[in-house]
Amino acid sequence: DTEVTQTPKHLVMGMTNKKSLKCEQHMGHRAMYWYKQKAKKPPELMFVYSYEKLSINESVPSRFSPECPNSSLLNLHLHALQPEDSALYLCASAWGAPAVYSNQPQHFGDGTRLSIL
Amino acid sequence: AQKITQTQPGMFVQEKEAVTLDCTYDTSDPSYGLFWYKQPSSGEMIFLIYQGSYDQQNATEGRYSLNFQKARKSANLVISASQLGDSAMYFCAMRENTNAGKSTFGDGTTLTVKP
Image (cartoon, rainbow over all chains, first blue to last red; front, side, top):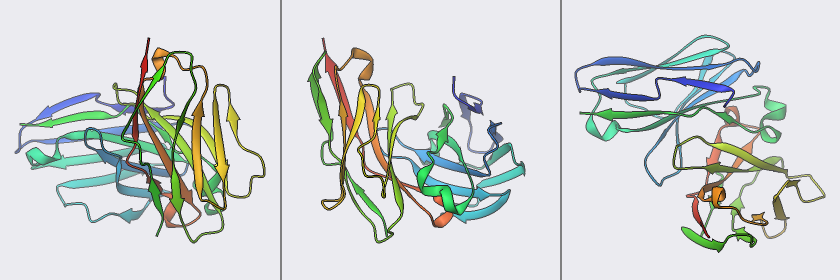
């Protein structure tokens, strides 16, 4: 079992639907990340939250909207997605202090497999 | 900018034998960490091993060891006594002390262990 919990594990939605992906961790990590991963490719960073503030947005389309309600939770709100948005969405967390970024691993959830019809 | 290169898209190894997965990197930051992750077909990304840029000794974790050659900017993963359950995609990644600690990943190597 992973220490980062993502729900749902699978999601099928139409292009006009609104849905949310959820990520939760209780390791006290203060940096949380959303990645998108296509099959046989490396994860692509979408967003970074550091101490509950959006720190990095990698020019992600506005149909993806992140939210960090508290230090343990990270949401990704989805609206009007396109078929090319079908992918595995991974959440990760890590210690947030800049002095220790480089010597601490990111901890990943199991991911949400998203299919857009 | 940081860059990770994994030149082996796919590798095969016989069960119980050792295998080396290659990783080279490029960065201008003197302080960085190198990580290897395993991703089975089920999708979860599993942290395997870490090597710090200032570490003098190569990291080891059970059957995993990291052959770190700083001057050559390489951080190869060695898996000893391969098992069928080692069949997965393996990613080499680097974190720096900037940019909110985001990771740069290589393209990955798919390892298949043959019985």
